[in-house]
Length: 161
Image 1 (cartoon, rainbow, N blue to C red):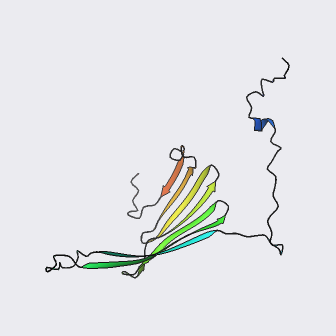
Image 2: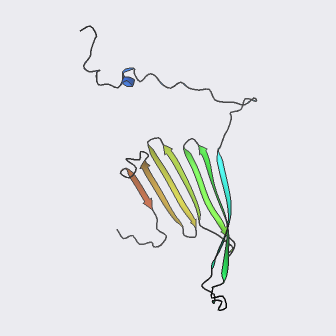
């Protein structure tokens, strides 16, 4: 044979054969014209207003029209998202009900991208306080197989298991 062939190196990944000394080159930080580090914190906020008209069956029926009277529900909803660092996200959602003059269900969630895994924690603040913590694989094939969930229950404090 003309070429040198090492049986031990034949099954190695080509990236491993080059050695682990090679690392990704480091980039210089981006600065503005005053010499300060450019800071960016992506965020979004959304507002929506909704009006719902429905038959109010709690009131007496209109015998002349043979229909229940209509009632209107008005809500103002808002939600937002804030990326506080690379891989860290905070999201929230809430609203205001004009009929009851009170905040609707308010939730806050924190998520972290851990490259191959994903961690998220959610808290419901109103009207029923509860939480949910999840740690799972990001690959869709493994997401249901490799996961850990911890949840609270707002309906009861009794552990049945």
